[in-house]
Amino acid sequence: MSVVKVDPRHPDPAVMADAGARLRRGELVAFPTETVYGLGADALSADAVARIYAAKGRPAWNPVIAHVPHVAAARALSRDWPATAECLAQAFWPGPLTLVVPKAGHVPDVATAGLDAVALRVPDHPVALALLEAAGIPVAAPSANRFTQVSPTTAEHVVRSLGDRVPLVLDGGPCAVGIESTVVDCTGPDVVILRPGMLGRDSLATALAPLGVTVRRAVRTIAHDRDAGARSTDDTPRSPGMADRHYAPQGDVWLFAAAQRQEIASAVTAWLAGRSGPETPRVHALLMGAELPLAPRDRTAMTTVTMPDAPDRYARALYAALHEADARHAALVVIETPPDTSAWDGVRDRLTRAAR
Ligand code: AMP
Ligand code: MG
Image (cartoon, rainbow, N blue to C red):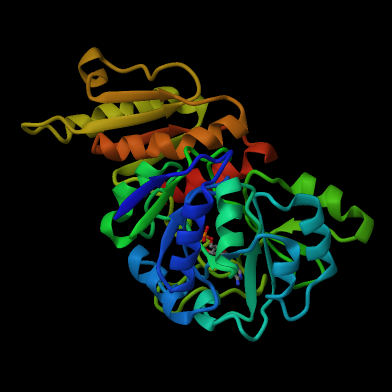
């Protein structure tokens, strides 16, 4: 595997041309976007997309997002480009927003997990855009990590998770947004948020107001069933993969509210007492407020990260903090949940799923 540094201000045309040619040949290329690093492959080749699933260990029911360099390329992948999609694309692309639209016939079923809709995005990152232009094909790109693990926000995270499963990693530095895109379903009369992200409901609603279209969160009516696949009586097509443990570090994850500081400290103390062996297990804490009130002996088992108190900065720092927990082999990760306001929806979604 090779890691090639690319200056985001001046992506080297020769490097981009080589990476684009690899994608056209059906190879995998990992590359930076503003959200997280993506594991890219030719979205129109069933074989190439199958390579993504194999490298990630991703189950076939979980569809991938196709990345394109501009709105025109997105329209070409849709059988029937909705007015809501046009409106949102004009307002937010390039940017951390994925639009689910009716799929064109030439998009292979493997890319959409058999659904009749395809997820599309124009990423806001100069290296990603240069790569998409050089490749000249839509590029399917889920996060460049093994399935269920924490998404990568640096090239080093990609290498740690995928190793030789990916032949080329373009290193464009750390990702600015830090969590995955907001995914919205544009196939129905309302716009439905399938996966929250840093682009929130209020911004979407403002952009859609001239169309008189409302925005709502997806309702899950039937729990995901691993054997039968994702089913729902309501939001169809909903986001498969929405319910699963995901974005998860290796250790157990406990979430707690600021008011539960004392209880969580007692629980950590009890957990440590129940695990006395030759080696004290490591505990990793992502806190927003004061330290946990632990006895000095227990405190030595703990690494504390103080997280930013603004949603955008918190999102940018989140996955690096979870990767650090893994790097320290933390067996337990305790996380203070951020405020219960809509600005934190994307972050709270990732924390909840890490803890599942
Ligand atoms: P990622 O893991 O970041 O590549 O995002 C993929 C997620 O986008 C999936 O787990 C789904 O939740 C959503 N998604 C992708 N394609 C579709 C689709 N055709 N219909 C509904 N949701 C989709
Ligand atoms: Mg992912």
